[in-house]
Length: 276
Ligand code: DGL
Image (tube, rainbow, N blue to C red; front, side, top):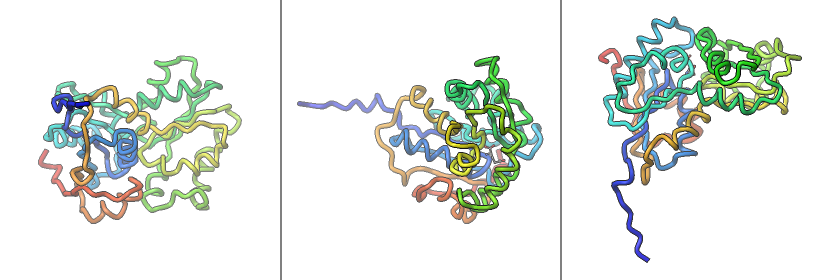
């Protein structure tokens, strides 16, 4: 039997992944799992993170620069892994990039609407994400009958970045209780983890809300839609993945493995994002 592999049917261009910082590595983790043959270029704006506490104007300005930088690579698709960037800037981005741009709100909303049986959904996110009402708009468009509750959780990003996300951590338990207790008795059976950092807290959130509640990982849901949007690559060497950050490379390495869940083999370089 002769197997002829037609190279022309593969697309070797990398997928671009953008986040306000390193949180997007939780989405990259999903790419590595679901699309192991895809090469990746990641940009984390570590010099200007967090976005979730900033004004819309600032987030839009930053995201425009970030996308100008990442579109200097020949990518086949860009994933905006950041919920804050997606919520505030995705609709305003021009369609003129020559590659599809996907965010993390749409697919997570679809997954939530499909998951809920009680019709009550809770969205957790940064202050900017919640202020934008991005999830309310999307969930309502999918099903106007859905009861939507939202909670901004500004303490969770710094908590995770300080290594505090484990299920038996007393501080984590107390902070989650503070954020989630107001929704007791609301018949919520689905919680959207609407922020890059929250998948690390999923065990702790699950313990707080109970086993009957479905947690939706926004990065995972977005990644599951990429498959149908691209011509796949044949093979990826993780050493060829490229990581760019806007603050020191040293700071990147300290946190990156926690968020990615594995060692980073690709190159890591600092970029001056103000030039874009
Ligand atoms: N990446 C952001 C998000 O998913 C969290 C960190 C930040 O505030 O920039 O909303």
